[in-house]
Length: 108
Length: 116
Image (cartoon, rainbow over all chains, first blue to last red; front, top):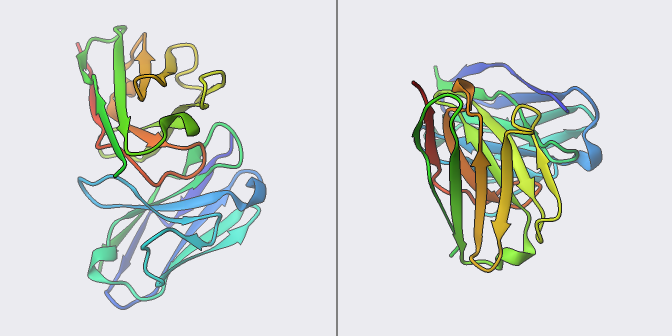
């Protein structure tokens, strides 16, 4: 099973700042099969990025994903008020699929 | 419009059983793998199990293998999760999702509480 470790656990930033979230895998993720999700309190997860760097439908271009192998990054170029949420990475290159523990982006 | 509606959650005693259902509509059910994901209160997401289009292949996370069984009824556009020997750490909101890779569509979930 691939273990995904997200860091930091909490990121305290102000609107307009840049957010950089990390997801590290215990072994290489096949074909960069990595996705990122955003979840707000009381809501279901929303996919932002798939294939490590492809934005899902309707996702603003301030969200970008990068990385390969074992190291992946989600970058939010300029935080908007609605971006404060919890973010999860997920690998789908091998079974069982696994999620990271999440990074909470909170308002500083 | 894609709709996934989970049901069957509730309060069950440790060691008990529960069967979750997911009614799917708005897409061609028979073309897709289906997946269950769960989230314990205040915790992160955990992938639970998936099943292929004709039900001939199933995958499980280690913590539920041998206790949970995923199944589907393509005639009814429905996905199921039979949960036996439930433990306190199985308590969670259980989501039904489409696909075997990344998940664009999620149901609202059904809550399973395990307590005596």
